[in-house]
Image: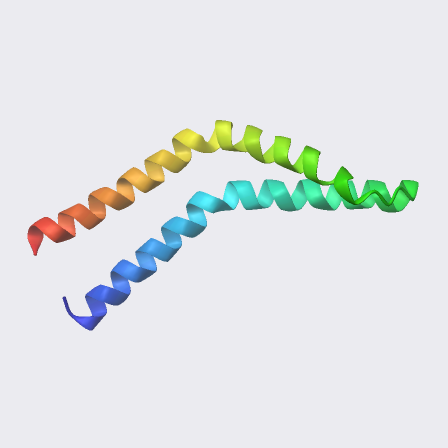
Length: 87
């Protein structure tokens, strides 16, 4: 492999990671901000209050986004295997 091909494969892998993980990260960010706003408005400063809603929201998002994530990873694996086969 040449240097350009290595960079292309690396760039494709990083982009796949970003695409696959972005739904979970965005939901975690939104839920965290909403819970923080609720804590600031109600002046409830319980540190463990953030974790349960965030875990539940991320789990539900994982269940909903799993087909999309699997398809993205599957297409990435097909691209990598086609590069391996073609040499």
